[in-house]
Amino acid sequence: MLLNPANRDPAARGRLIGALATLVILWPLFQAAEVKPGALFDSGNLKVIGNFLAAFLPPETGAEFLGYLAKATLETLAIATAGMALAFLIAVPMAYLATGAGREKPTLNPITRSLLTILRGIPELVWALVFVRVFGLGPAAGVLALGLTYGGMLAKVYAEILESVDAAPARALRHSGASRLLAILYGLIPQASKELASYTVYRWECAIRASVVMGFVGAGGLGQLMDQAMKMLNGGEAATILLTFMGLVFSADGLSGWLRRALDTPPANHASPFGWRSIGLLVTLFASIVASFQLLDIGFGELFSAEAAHSIGEFIAGFFPPDLSAEWLAKVAKGIWETLAISVVGTLLAAIAGLLLALPKWRAPFSFILNSLRSVPELVWATITALAVGLGPFAGALALALHTAGVLGRLYAEALDNAPPTPGKALRLAGAPGGFAFLYGTLPGAAPQLIAYTLYRWEMNIRMAAILGFVGAGGLGQLLYFELSLFHHAQASTVIMAMLLLSIAVDQASAWLRQRMR
Image (cartoon, rainbow, N blue to C red; front, side, top):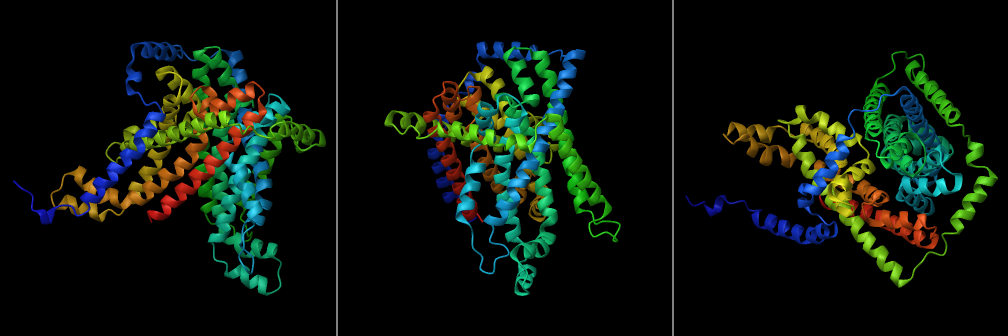
């Protein structure tokens, strides 16, 4: 039976052209990422990965090792907490300088905004690698790295949150003669306090994952213990560490969710403007920060002493001038292309897997898989995928895909739950199969949010793709690791600049795409 031309999809031609254009763009990126699905089923690779995974059983449960594990777990929590405390101290004044909120004529500070871009554009693992060279192995490097990167992230978001709330109270205070600082404190922060606190708690949750990753370059905690176990091919110890880390992430997720709910609950005691619960949380937070610095045996005086500043200055001076020779720039350009390919391919594969795992019909049995995928750091996945497919960018793309599928699957599930239910119900009542009702009824309503989540995640993945090379997954990270290992600081400087520029370019491209799709 021939279809009536009048009933054909009027957007079919546009969709076909879009699909063909997407293939033309993605094909060279898949080539650069060296995507070879057959490598997953190569008999040699299957034997290697099988032996590796078999070595994980049984997990190590010796008393001596569990003692080291407990100490490393506490150290990881302390690094995350101390790093967030430092990030907050950096973020508050930087957000004040960067935002136009509270000014009679809204203006932005381009110098501060540029500094924030640099701080958050360079991955925390790169900062950690630099500080390990200055302070030596240990948690001080991790705390400083988290403080700088997360300080830039917090300041940017704090500034945007303050600019998004109603400015009328602040303007009224300014017209009454109040200073800009008082106008922000009493006019804007009361409106934005829950959102500011919620984002800070979320960042602490992310800092726990980041503190594990930084241990791979010697910044202490569970990551350093995991790196030692992997290098010694001690699968039993690695399995126990991995299970501990997954438990830590699940616990942090639960605690983070409870804290955000507690912040959203109105205080029962109206005699206190903040409520006894909020006061209790603040006291607990302060005690946790003090305990974290004591556990790590570091202080702000050590981190910011004149001797430390001199050492950092001398070390950074060795990175200038960067190597801008044509031969080296050609290698860096190849690394940029590989890194971009890893991020795009990894994010695309994750989006496909995440959407499948987020389908309402399958969600319940796969929720544990989603949580497990995102609980394992990308560098750990990269170590495993490198054994499965060999060293190179394909291992990096697979590692990104595995971790990001867990992240996007959770976000996609929330977006699908919040999509308007009416179109899908109408199609099912009209006799359409469940799959068609989902594709043409539910999915279009959730599509803008799904795309926004995917683009936001791509912005984060470009930073991670730039450092997966530390474990042999190609891209700029592999170049940087080699050059720093050989003390070629001029060449390493060029790579770090390329990472920063690539991160900025992807941020701008993602923002432009989100704007076009509104």
